[in-house]
Length: 54
Image (cartoon, rainbow, N blue to C red; front, side, top):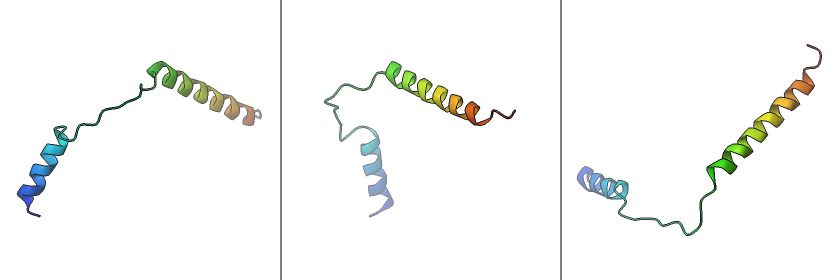
């Protein structure tokens, strides 16, 4: 493969030449953010339980 051919293929790929269509609804950002918040609060609670000597 030459550099020109490779470059042309990468430009086609980056421009959306092979378009992908999702057939399902994406996950709500509120659910993702809420889940991350709950997980971080749980990790914080666990960490503070192990540091009772301070």
